[in-house]
Image (cartoon, rainbow, N blue to C red; front, side, top):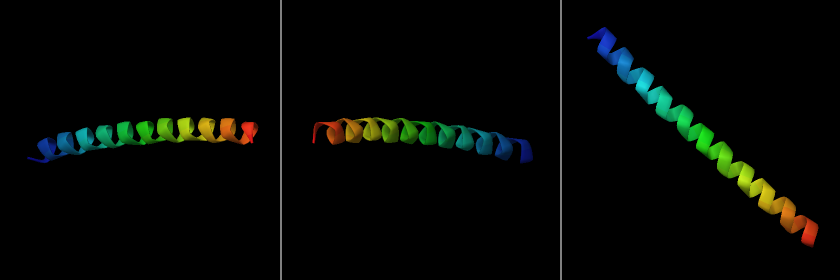
Length: 41
């Protein structure tokens, strides 16, 4: 039972890491867009 719960926990954490990576990617894209807009103003 303990090992099964551990497997679920590891899978959950992997999904969380993926989400954090995706959020970082989106934040980077937004930063690029803002920088481009700032240069045009």
